[in-house]
Image 1 (cartoon, rainbow, N blue to C red):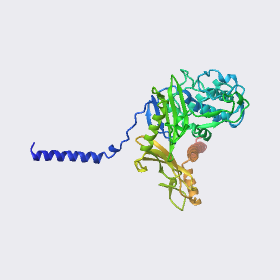
Image 2 (cartoon, one colour):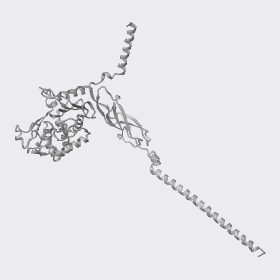
Image 3 (tube, one colour):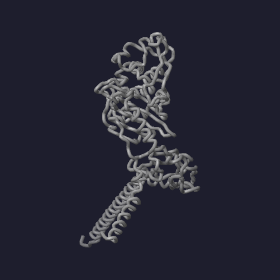
Image 4 (cartoon, rainbow, N blue to C red):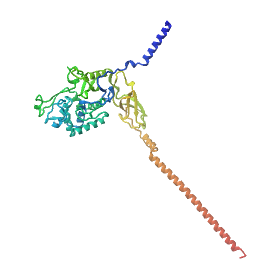
Length: 464
């Protein structure tokens, strides 16, 4: 290859390279996704519900004891007094296998609903689940009906519960996405958050304390290694809950929540394994890896702040102004890639048609939503920046203008037109009849005159 030819090839190469770097600046900033060792995964922003990471998220899986998140939610939504005492019965141990997880309550023990919730969510007590179900609904099947109805309310399309504890049943299943939805709702409850973020709990003295294994009040430890002990290799400083689960059919499951610098996340992992020789299943390391990846690449950002001026719109019936500024009625916050700003999102604005005074500062007059690549990241109300008073003169003119376009006015106008037509018709008919009558009278008069003249001629005839 000659030197001029080589120079041309090099020039062409650098031109192509420059074009690629210019046209595709975001290519180098693409977020790589981690390889998570779980059968089904959903990592999402609880504020918006939007996913940051998904893997087989709609696949039906057995949830094991993560079921108890829904159990707790139903209890908290249906019991007003959490300090009321109830009695544990033999019935509450039906179906609870000897080697399954229990809180340690005994038959005849009087315990508060609150302590039962701690027994449900920390050591994953199956007898606590049955006791709560019986107390809330009278029996377990009725309580399970509530669980399924609530799942439907939350938009869960791949979920069906058969019991309140998560012990295996072929007809007891959910999806990673559905379990995220359930946890997202449960985390809105302050009591639930307090319980699932607790590592250890001493329960109140009970009438059966002497029958506990240690002969004392129950002392509960969470099964969630992310929050149990700072000395544990599985501890995660930003973890805030929530629930573990395991059966041989479900594998190892973990629903976890975290918060870092105001950014909250919920992770759901179903169907993890426990490596041979390992003290704990993969759920903890994989969840920590997923959280770290999310916090490295995503950030909770206020894309639009309350009071930000959004759009000026026309307004009628005021002599003060003919335009009104709409502002953000609140903050629009979402977990988004760190390199994105509000300018990268598409705004969709909806405003009430034909705005008229009076308007009070803060009145909701529209909505604004932000979306990117077809995904909506949130919406906020648009409100009036200031008061706008009404002009009475313009108001009455407006009423008059509107009256002329109302169905009532159109009906009245139609009636008037019909009456006018009837009047004209009646007038024409009446006039025609008068003319006909006049003609008849004239013809009758002429006939009488002719008859009179003929009679006169006969009388004057000398031949008669």
